[in-house]
Length: 472
Image (tube, rainbow, N blue to C red; front, top):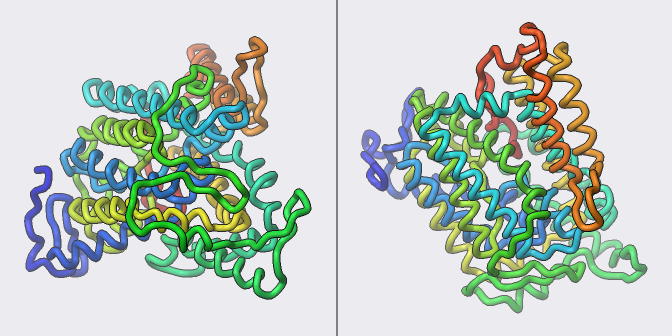
């Protein structure tokens, strides 16, 4: 069925109650318009997270388009989805750099994570999704996703927020208001609008109150567009120098370190939860059985992440923001996603676009990341709520409590002078190993989360991961 769509009716907007299936399409002008909506929906988070990980946002957008096409081909166009930049590895990327790792070490470790996800997809495809239920029940998956998100809190507190606290505060308030008060598609792109607002607010403060004093005592404008004017309109992604002097490298080959690989493996669990939730949400909306394609979804995302990382790009994942667009329009045609992917690829070949993204002030990122990191953590709680995980059971309460504090507090277990496991990696290991180690000894009435038989990340009645503009 790949790349073959039947025209829905006369190609016009579906009537009330009408649904355009993945293998159907509207007229090409309308399909192109929908593709543009999907680009806008994914844009904010897709180029914010690479900057936070120290990777090139222009390259990330380019590879997100290529990864999306690869994903659609692997799932045979059965699962409409856009693969934007994943936040699952943000904390791990920070940990790698804190230990002296370079961008090639980050992308090398993430490439291995992508391969692992692909192999999990192969196994799920042939064995079935129940294997995921057994190894990663909702109680465990929710804890891992939560500790990944909340482990990032010091990044905001120590790096982005202090850079310009008032801009960060204003941007945060703007994103919250747009997300909650505004209705419809606008609320789904609150992150993108927050970036625009924060940048404009920074320019206003530069004009009214002058430069800001940095931590080292030097003064500089909050925003500087000089690099944008000097950048070419068309070209391959190149290294970008940010306002704070840090460099986002262009395309590069990965390097591999066992220590750094251990730091990113917990992120695979988050990707499994994200992809499973995405498939379940789309299945509910389209009323089509997509369980046979669950393994293919894992394979598609794993392949996209590995390919993007191989050339120096960012990890990918299925995007909840784009589920919101589908829910609003009732158009699930994969043709629109091919259009979105092509548009993203075109943006990715514009160095001027990359320079524009890199000009976003650190204070703006402070306001954005406060919301995004919290949303990642709370998505773990949402998995618990959707799957009715009972914390009256010590099996769910005690092992998870230990893993959460270790992960969020960045606790370390040192083996030698050159090797230690800390933070997210150690918290994930403790959560999974401790849970399964004591589970055989737990009374039957303590196994409440397993009794539901829900897949990790299964969405609740409100649509699961699609809820909210920045659900990841």
